[in-house]
Image (cartoon, rainbow, N blue to C red; front, top):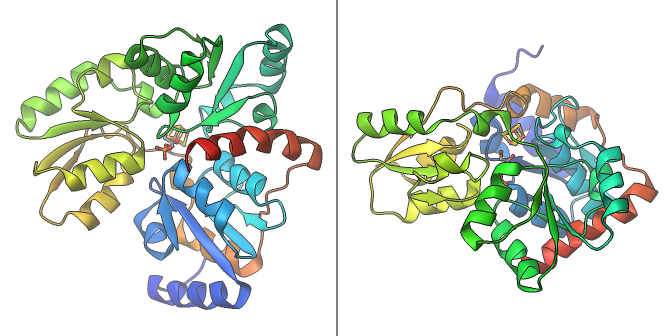
Length: 308
Ligand code: 13P
Ligand code: SF4
């Protein structure tokens, strides 16, 4: 337990970053104090791109385990640190390596599209990785080639893509407990309360909730949409952390979280103090065996080629 103030911690963090040639990457779902000291805040795709481009020696990844793993896959020679090792992802844990390995063996001709919210062990069996910001484009590409496809672990993003592109894929039965819990009735109640607000949602929500949205996109895309929009009020259908950046970019606009349940427990495990201690002591290093890393990185690189 530290007795330092936020500003004192920020000063030390800034100094250590220079001394150690470290970079801090943070996801939009992190607490505001961490987003404010990060060198870069982004969605899963933007953070993976940053991790592949940085010339820092140390990456401190403020997010959840699969995100730090992706950074390590892309920068195996760098030290990648995750301030709280227990910060996992409910959805990533819903795909188990033995099951996807079996699927791969039984379906050698199927293109396996792996949502980035998955472990490196599972990514070994995928043909291409996708995130919420490029899934539709990549799925469309394979659909146009007439390929048989499996998408997982997120059934909701998979259903949304099938609906938008009018295609069929096999779906894994995974979901995000936070987004999946939203109901159309939550949206109806919020729309009655805020009749002038637009509703924006993350594609990890169920299709019946997405059908009511004015815009669907990744965390970064939602932030860009509300910033570009002429509307002044928005109902937010994703994790509450995005509102920090929305408010920073849009001082005159109002943002209402769709439900108090939209809080990712795993993302919120990391406190400023954890980032402070992690950078100070260089603890919690992500390690992936060479064998897994060499196989798993292929699908992530393939995704980055699509996103240039
Ligand atoms: P983004 O790719 O939109 O950042 O989403 C990550 C995530 O975990 C959403 O729940
Ligand atoms: Fe995983 Fe859901 Fe948290 Fe995103 S919000 S990191 S999908 S548990």
